[in-house]
Image (cartoon, helix red, strand yellow):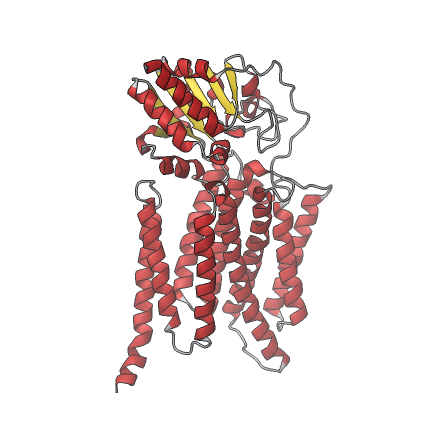
Length: 473
């Protein structure tokens, strides 16, 4: 009697768990939209995922539970270990890698289902998969494989293992042909009995398209790419959820896909690029020969820089990836706090694509304890630069480069940038005279109102703190 009751109510209990998990996913995502509640949002979503996984393990007919639990334990342990050890500067690479793994897992599920259908067809069976499930399996493999291979290229570029851009004549035409090949082979799988050779060719074509689509993308556009592949992974997971008739996968994939799509649109807007250009454009390709930059970089010493800001009325600090590399966010906040105590109005200006992924700088500043009300977005701070006495740029490069507005031949032309050049004075902390991630010279560094404070970001920030204290001694 008890076994009958359990068999009868267990599926309903599992669906209820999926519903609760979906609610936690949505509420968690909502809380992630604000830095104040983001940490709690991550916890809520994590609890939802744990509930969904535990409920799935209780599904009737589940096999190899021991292997599944072992796999979860090993993978979870590795993820916990790597997540604890990874530096904040390497977090974009980890996000790209883990996102790719999600897309690859979705593609693997679809391939497994297609192989099963091919085996049934080879033995003369019929109705191996419902037509709708077959279509969704093919779409899941295509999208998941593109996300997987593309994310690996993004990871390699962010990690510095390969060139930032790789182009060759006729590249876009070749890419389209590979995509058409994948679509044609996917159509064959849908309208003809699945065959192993066709499945293999389809998977390889999809993987190749992901690689080829990402190779020409410049490093400065990686935030857009990461957001795009995040959306594709969510979509692939949702499709494979329909194939497996798993509500948790459908809901989680849909939420991730929708959020990733919105974020991609926001990032593309921040880069002043259409979504079509994100998908098929050769990012970072210049339209011609860039304009020459006149003038020379003018150096300043830390004591003079500290005095300039100590007696300023308004100071804006612009952080970039270099600050993350130097781990200077804590010293920069200490310096800013000292300025505030002296009566200086200090704000932190964040470009939407500063760093290597969306929100990278916000996380760093939050880690250092910078109050949220001191952090302003590009649209809000740009009109204030003409009335700003000093702008301190630490580690930012391409997002403050004025050629984005003045040089049509520049790779970043048309990208909205922080108008630091319009400020009364600008001080740039930079390790050396190298170029930014886009690989171009920054006209701001040669401007008449800009002074360069060369040195390691954390060391220079510490020296500014020391010099400021000496003024009050």
